[in-house]
Figure 1 (tube, rainbow, N blue to C red):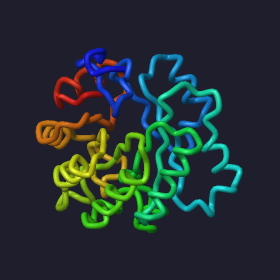
Figure 2 (tube, helix red, strand yellow):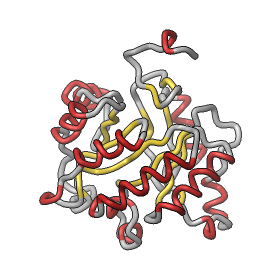
Figure 3 (cartoon, one colour):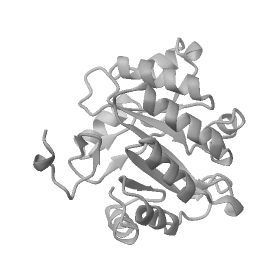
Figure 4 (cartoon, rainbow, N blue to C red):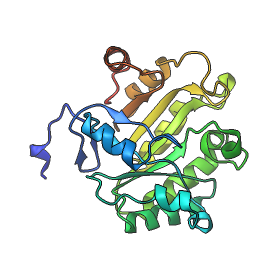
Length: 230
């Protein structure tokens, strides 16, 4: 595919052009392979696997092996990895690429206590130095696009999504998904989209808006309000 053959109004992740602007977010315990396949049939432009731990010592469980099975799925196959160690995340990215992943997504958005207690998921947003190490290590480890999922920050006093978005762009991250809540909010209250709009205005990589989008009408409103790519 050449650059001139791409439709400029549809988002691209690396050289993977999405057929539309609707993406199925990765959700542990929800977005298994049958669910992803059904969402593809219903028109999702991209689907993302359930979160996979970066600790390969835990990959021998039935749950992990099932989550990492993408047989028969159309591309691009996007796999989300989670962890708090740059070297382990880089290795996990490379191994998943060998197993057929075409896009690697780094989880910095999960608010679950068991994830954050291991300094992973949205807890990473408290340590910008570590965030930079992780982004650089994972991007260097693979020759496929790497994306990032994050929140607006850890809490209301530390909304640093804009800082991390600029770090991500500099590191070579190919697209950025932002949930319009802090980790402190978890899933309470209402998602806000002003932070997403600010990030979209500040960086040139594709931005995907996330949070409380439960209808076609809401999706259109959020796209128009934020200027997000999907």
